[in-house]
Image (cartoon, rainbow, N blue to C red; front, side):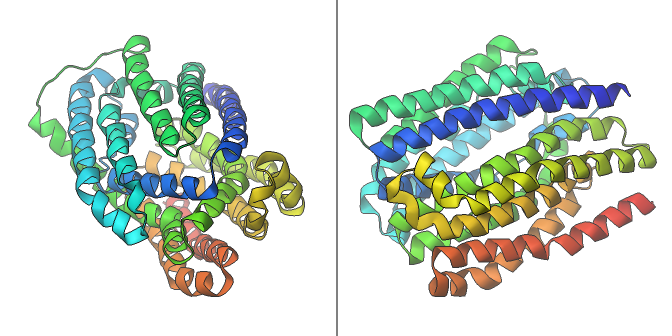
Length: 406
């Protein structure tokens, strides 16, 4: 019963955090959409795609590992920090080396300087104190609330200030850099233990061995989440990519954030009751019904009042994205309900299950995204994502039956 109360408190705190962050986010989009052009959002989107991909292919699953382990954080914090720093350096170097190729692929020669500026983001984030995972591991979501909201507010404020000054896509990158610097400093102030440089080979091997499935899952999930963006950017151009990404954020974030909140809170709770299958099943079903009751009404509102919401939040210049947003609202509901299974799989150390379902999703997307985008434009890209999410449902059902029958 105690964990149930902790989970309710956690959902409340994280729900408050996400509401606060999305309120700031909607304000940020509403302001920036009037200061910057869709093509500038598109160029920034390409830079984010590149960083995200490099982060994924170097993913070590450190945070998941630290939550799964019942040992105290102090045992692994030095190793986790060293791995994060090395990873950040590697990603920054790869951004610099691949920038000419990416700029050429998307035919945006003016974006090279933006990529060089963006290379500082992972470099800085590598120095974040890994002990911040304690907030989630020990269900201290009130502290997580303060931590996340303050970082996002700083990021957004810096981006808006520079956009007012420069009217440049670089303002978006500078916001991320400012947020990263603030996060590093804050992580060392508010949480312990504080890491120090120390090389422990056996612990590094253990982290990487456990994280290999998370790396694969991350790669597949990256292509599922960004494959449509890549195709839209290449086939339809950066202006269309800016429209699509803004529409994607508007239509899916309010819905999928609900599931993400539940996933973040229930993951450490599932770990604590992982040796009791019946208790796990009851807890999981409660989460499914709770998430469904929240996201379905959101999806209905987004679907039927799309034009009004776009005009209110983004403005007249973004109306072309309305048909795609309707499709993506349906996808958001399906993703939210089906995606909450990942927290259960990870809690049981079944990372391979997460890898399997993300592989099926990206396969479904890959089959349709190019022909559908060529034929139907932005709507076709949205339909291909919807098909990919539907394709994973039977796989998720199979894995759940396997777990609860054991």
